[in-house]
Structures are given as C-alpha cells and as structure tokens.
Image 1 (cartoon, rainbow, N blue to C red):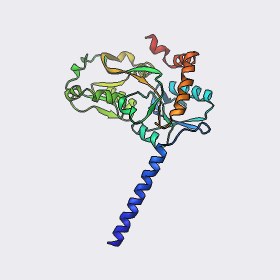
Image 2: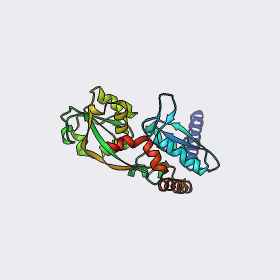
Image 3: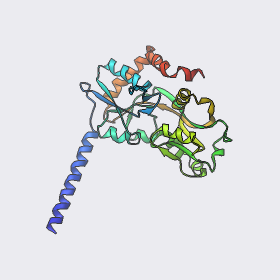
Image 4: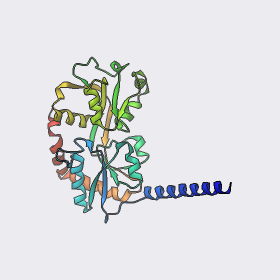
Length: 264
C-alpha cells in the first residue's frame, strides 16, 4: 500500500510539473531581440508550400520576410501539423500561425489575431460535369475538406446541411489529399478556400475540369495568429503591415502570387 501511495504521489507530482511547464510556455511573450518561429502548413499553396526545388515559398512567406526585415527581427519557418496549430503556438514551439489562417469565433478564444490582410470565401467545388448545382443537391452525397480547418468549421455550423449528407464530412490532413479524393471520384464535392483552390487548379492545368458553385459557406478574412500574451508585439506588427499596404509593397507581393487568379 505504501509503495502504491508513493507511486501515486510521483505521478501527481509529474502531472503538476507538466501543467506548470505548459502554462509557463503559453504565457511566453515574443522578445524582439530573439528570432521568431513562423508556423505554417507546407502544402497550402500559394500561401506557404515546398516548391520543386525543396524550398519553402509562398505569398505569406514572402510577406512575412518583408515584415520582419522591416522590424529588424530574425525569423525562421517551421512546417507544422495544421490540426495541431494552436497547440504548437500555445506550448511555445512556434511564435505565430501564418498561412491562410482564417479569423473565426472559436479561434479568437485561444489566439490573438493581427489585423486582417486578405479576404477569402469557403467555396464548394465539383467536377465540371456534375449534376450538383447547389447545397441542396448535395443531400445524400459525400463531401470532403481539411481537418481542423476554417472550411470544416463553416460546414459544421450548418447543422441541417450536415445532416442531409450521406455521412459526416470526410477530412484529411492536407488540401492536396482533399483534391485527390475529388479527382478519384471518392467524394462528390469538396469545400476549400477559394484563393487556394483557384491557384491549385490554375497551376495543375485542371481548372476546366472543375467548377465552383454559386453558393458557398461564407466570406472570411485571413490574419496572423499570435499568443494572447503577445499584445505589444502584435501592435508593432500591425503598424508595419499597414505601412506595407500604404506604400504599395503589399500589393506588389500579392501580384506575384495572385495576378492570374484575379484576372479570371
């Protein structure tokens, strides 16, 4: 019995030590004199992804480089499991989430958002020859999207729609896998970010094989997610971001990645 009590005490002590460590890390504040780690999904083109040369590139990564060069802050990019992004942030493994990160009410409870910098929609994509033309037509059909994404949150918010599907939305770790399911005919439709979808279909040369429905799951804004303790840093960050928008730098960077999409 005494041995069992000692074991229980040891377990409880270890548990509380772990809790204190996580709490201390979640209270971490960004120090301008130290480098920052930018967490991103390296499959989410054109915002952040690995190119054919194995380099990390993308609109958000180029934007981040300009922001932190102006701030005089060292930075590095860290690919993360998108489903664990808030955990990675609040345990101190990364200092921000920056990769087409949508502002939602649920996320605002756990992160501090920067000012928004781009607008987006959650769109429904189907094969061009599909008979699906509306959300109602998806009754009894299979739908896919990325796990722990704003797309999934938007779908689940419409309970009547979800209940009309053949099953719960099918989710994958990346949007590449989501598109693969649609390409292979395993699902009837997918819900994805419009900006990413347009770029993906344009680059793959398959744009003519798919179409977006007129109906969607709402408009949203992208922003950068920080720990809620990083208030002062985010204020400086927002100032630099606004300067870039005012002096035309933001528009110039954006045109490097979205000019073809916007012209469609």
